[in-house]
Image (cartoon, rainbow, N blue to C red):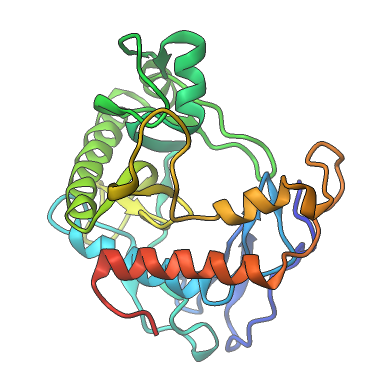
Amino acid sequence: MTLGAEETPPAYDLPSGYDHIYSGKVRELYRSPEGRLLFVATDRISAYDWILETPIPDKGRILTQLSLWWFDQFADIVPNHVLSTRVPDAVAGRALLCQELDMMPVECVVRGFLAGSGYADYVRARSICGNGLPPGLREGDRLPKPLFTPATKAPQGEHDENITYDEVIVLIGQNEAQDLKRLSLAVYARAAEIAEERGLIVADTKFEFGLATSGRHRGQMVLADEVLTPDSSRYWPLDGWAPGGAQPSFDKQYVRDWLTSADSGWDRDSGETPPPLPDEIVAKTRAKYVEAYERLTGERFA
């Protein structure tokens, strides 16, 4: 597991009865005294499978508030796992109380544009996750239609692997696979329309779903985790879209670019922990997350 400097959960001053049960790259998961799940979004940032030692101020609050905004946009399409935003003061604004679900072991990736690992797959095989594509597409091109391109959930520190829809059926069954594909494409279509109205392209994104085994959504597929944040999605400015290469993006690209530049002095293949981030890179990265939030929601982040 490649975690860098942050190998233990942050010391939040939570009331007694909250038990820490899991640390992810960005989130900490606790069980509340009532048996609910408390999802806490930290200010950690990861790159190249390392959790960096330098946090991005307010990042966890931005991710949480943006996810809540998006959940509201999809309320008529799919239920979500949020039960309450009334959380302990120590994690106010960056945490949600959520329903426990039987999580699907699949990353539900939807691609509307050709980028990232999808572009690499296209160059190699002219297809993505078994979806054949026409010749002549460039990096950054809009796909003929949005594609459901699922991936495995790799252990932390390892890479997810793209799989076909048929493999999803084998993994979880046909009914559940159909639900994941249908809901993923429907949520993406709504999000892409909303984002383009605000001058942003959702090039691709990933969703997580789980099956509710109790409560009012029992037996239904439920949208979980974060949704359509700059951590889980590739956002591009619509007015800067220029297919034929990498696009400017609203995410941690400043961090990635600095880490792989000569200025960082870090060799990605060395196995050594990445260096601390300079203040300038931290400020620019925070500004991009804030801008994405404000452009999408139309609200000031405070």
